[in-house]
Image (cartoon, rainbow, N blue to C red):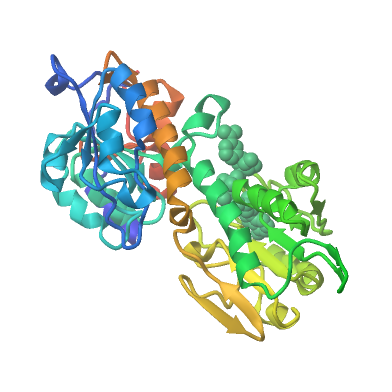
Length: 421
Ligand code: NAD
């Protein structure tokens, strides 16, 4: 099992760990360089830093270096970066070699196509910040640890008020929720709003959102802005008021669910019995919807199947299902990740990397998240790793060859690392 492999390679070696790591000696007496490579995942158009945030980083004492063309496909040409005080690196290799901190959108793990090529470019002690999909594979996360980098996975930013402005997962979910509705409107053969015309009255589209986290809430808002009638369902009853405050109808299912939300605010994995019951109870609502948008996921787990082939059969021809959980296996039994198929007359869309299709604003939001995190971790232009600080401790994934995140170690059942008392 993958977890065991990593356990053997990255087990605790018995030495005591300081709870407070000081700034690297290497950085003393010179400016720390923040490097931004061009993303390499096929079709990725986002960039980790936009020109507007460069001054905040230089003000905090950093120097910013960009790979030529890194922001071009997001709408940020090199000249805009240099105007704001960034330098353009001579080459990609030069960027990785000179940067003390590398900022990426999809780093190794999250970029499961070309991401591992970056491992060879990293230097020991270099800081890497990006989406690293830390809970997906113990082997991938172990490989990242072995590269010797101090990595921060944005997926691990704790959901506390203080860290809200660093929460890239929420930023990208906002983008995906918005774009899912536009995709649905584009694929659907129907209007979304109600219209009263000389040629008759058009009834509004009925949009059902299953899973009301950040993406689901944004999908409700966007569907409402387009004039659709929105309803939504989630296992966490706490979201009912949020749905209603956005003008949506909350679908209540008579299910006994205890502990639907974990201590971090995420939905919890439900038993197969509960999921089966959910499907039965949801079938009528799904069948009565013109558009279904599913977003139901549990961190690190395969997405639950909430819409079966039979439920799709029960939808009217021309209906649309957008499965935002496609990357995690999908919430619909018929979803093909990365494809749009028509099955039983229903268009089933399984988008991959949807946030990357709104690259200008997705990059802007992501860059602000990263800048806030770096400025938070920095003092006088150097990063300080205070392991007693919750944001630092929770977000740091690897350091000195080890997986150091307590959440990830627990998830992969690795023994806890000892800390100096
Ligand atoms: P997510 O992407 O992890 O999951 C999407 C939704 O799917 C969740 O609402 C989850 O409850 C739901 N879900 C899981 N299994 C389901 C099932 N079987 N049936 C129906 N729904 C199911 O969620 P998220 O966007 O990360 O948000 C999770 C929570 O964290 C939300 O309440 C959000 O408001 C909160 N949050 C808080 C902060 C903060 O305080 N800083 C930041 C971001 C999010």
